Length: 314
Image (cartoon, rainbow, N blue to C red; front, side, top):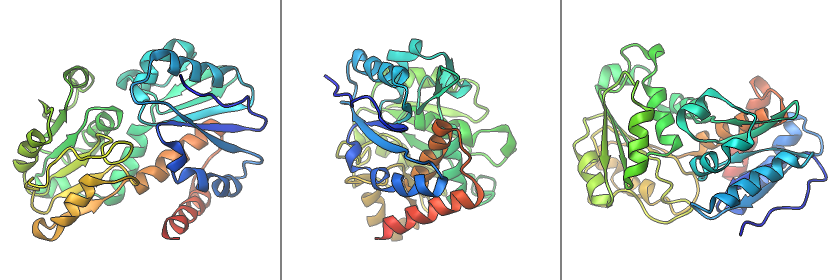
């Protein structure tokens, strides 16, 4: 059964995850809170087992909802399960939460509990930071997203937006090891203007086949969670990477087998490799701003970014 914290005695934000004590945010949050001007605010972790019983998610959400000094939460790993188990406890859901059927943050306003899906925003910020300008228009590359959770769907939706005109991937390939989640992805992404292929890949060798056929300049994304809370990679060491490909490991901590495999072949395939650190920074600052109803932009965001980089290099 889930272990819930005691009622908050100061403005508190929660991190709902699996191994929250290992996250850099636990050390970083106090410095960020000072830079942002959040007096007396603190963060606490709530660890829940992967695919926990629905009652665990409901108890967690109910605790935050009814505890006056519990202001909200960031949700990782459990985004879809929490949404499905506890959506009726919320007075409001943002449009992305409804579209993608997942929650990445919880906030309160005027006595109402509000659910948000921030991945379409934060994934876009992170992608813009490392994908070269006009990359899709000039490379005709594809995208292979390994995994079909909320982050995976958000990435696919972001890359296919109308605002990009013809600067979009030639095709998006979405793979997953379970059929029900893949079927849900088909429905959620049915209106994408970029061709999408869906593949059931219960073993890494099947993912290898899809990555191996990706065009030069393609983007390969590990959105499975493997290599962070659970060891492993969705690919084998025998995979053929696309030449001049972009490789995005959404994780920034853990065993990172997917990223280590790409690094071993980086020179051979001329790969550009990015981890999840910038994604982590944008993801957290967006949710902190929502939970505490503050703006984190301009000099304030720059200060947060500098503090995070300093801590990572220490």
